[in-house]
Amino acid sequence: MSTIFGHGRLRLYLLKLLDENPRHGYEIISLLRDRFLGVYSPSPGTIYPRLSRLEEEGLVTHEKVNDRKVYRLTDKGREELHRHSDDLDELERELTASVSDIARAVKEDVRDTISSLRAELKFGPRGGEQRDTGEEGAANDERATSDKRDTGAWWERDWEKFARGFSTWGPPWSKHGRHEDESSGPEFDRTLSDFSERVSRVMREAGQVGESAANDLRRILDDTIEVIRRDLAGWGPGGEESRTDTTGDSSGSPDHGDAARSEQAGERSPREEPPHAEGGSSDPWQTVTHDEGDQPATGSADDDPGTTDPGGDTTTR
Amino acid sequence: MAQWTIDQPATRTLDGIVALRVRIVGGHLNILPTDDPVTFDISEISGEPLLVTQEAGILTITYDDLTRSGLLERLRPSQLSKYRGVGRRSAMIDLRVPRECPLELTTVSAPVVIAGGSAKTRVRSASGDVTLDDINGEIDVNTVSGDIAGRDLSGSLHCNTVSGQVAVAGGRVSDFSARSGSGRLLADVDLTAAARVRLASVSGDVALRVPAETAATVELRSAMGRVDSAFGLDRRDLRGRSTMSGNIGDGIDPATVTTTSVSGGVSLLRRQPDAPAAIPRGTT
Image (cartoon, rainbow over all chains, first blue to last red; front, side, top):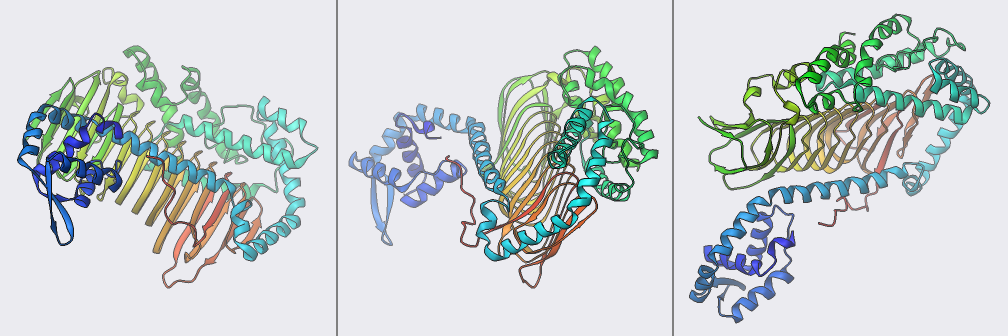
């Protein structure tokens, strides 16, 4: 922000502020801060020496009021301000135009904050965080580990089945499924990350904005937990998961194992395909908004039921 | 009622604005607070001209063919195509409005930055990122793929996104809900007494950090993800469902914290009392 005040402009701006009213130093600083919405906050170390210099030049004078120096513009100062009124106008104009600069600074500022937060939270309870929490945390960790030991056996067994179920979905799944069947640990993680990738992609493609989509997500969450809980034990290798479509539709993955729904999903997938094929953009909104002419736009209008339906369908459930 | 059609860069100052509504497609949208009259600055307009209307204290900036109500409903892909060259439309809009001015902003791809405000703030965007700083009020943000980043937000905060990330740092919330499909949810906030926090994701990780002395009733759930807590909570691992729940801290009016994820990890972290409450700021 300091570039705004290059070339003696801060000096000019100080004269302008004092021309409006006699002010004390702190008031000037807070006015400047307000003017720049807290993004540019001049320090007293910047302002007071400049005020003294102006005083030496005879442009301002001060008197003590309640132990505080209140600065006032002299006639000479007013002349000086007058002489530079063009510069002042320009400065004012630039300050107005700099809203977007300020916004950019705000944005970067927030980004910085967020990325430092992200770095901190990445440690997680397993990292530095939990060490700090002392015994309570350690006990908690222990409890968690022992729980895992108890349940480890069935987890591994069932996830193996789960993974094999996934493996019949298509090439990407079968690859992981077959190669890593032996070691269920990595397999487990791999399956999870693949699953989340798949859901991520679906979500990107869904292209539905607003509360309804979010409500759907919430419902899918709850449904999925129920469905998975109910069906987990019953899943055998291959099982009813013999679908080979790889269109990973939003409800297909979470509802995995629910025959009635997979039928519904199957019928939806062909309609979902065109947006994938069309252009590199996976976001239907982008596809449309970046369309250059009417023709392609009309094309995607026809596809629209497909692109919006994943969201829409889940609403009806 | 005053109305302008703007097809080239323009700057204007208006008096008596009590609410702001903006609906644009591309470009950018910046909103900063001011104690002076409202100023708007529009530049780099491409595509259709913008229509600016001032009526009954409401300043509306939008396109001629998008003025009727229910715009967002019609902003879906099928309807969008009816509007000529919507995708080419773009405008850089910078606004300065009073802090207490309610905002209703809708963009398709334009990123939105809002700093300073104490009124109802609603933002909807398809692919634009939304950045909020120092806002106190009722905040409601929805995006499809845009990220939502907030700092020092207080009051009630609702964020919904399909594939964007949600990150909130600092601030003190009384009602905070965030939902995401694949994006991560990160929050480091203080909770007021009896605050309600609900975080849910499908595959995105969920991480919430609260002050160590927070009093709350907590339930963390994940179907397939790892569930972690830096507080002493009871853990239950059922089939296809990990849960940690319990009460933390002791206060008269405990907050309620619920986080859910299908395949994302869920963690509840604590901020040490001696740790600075303020998040380290950037360099600017």
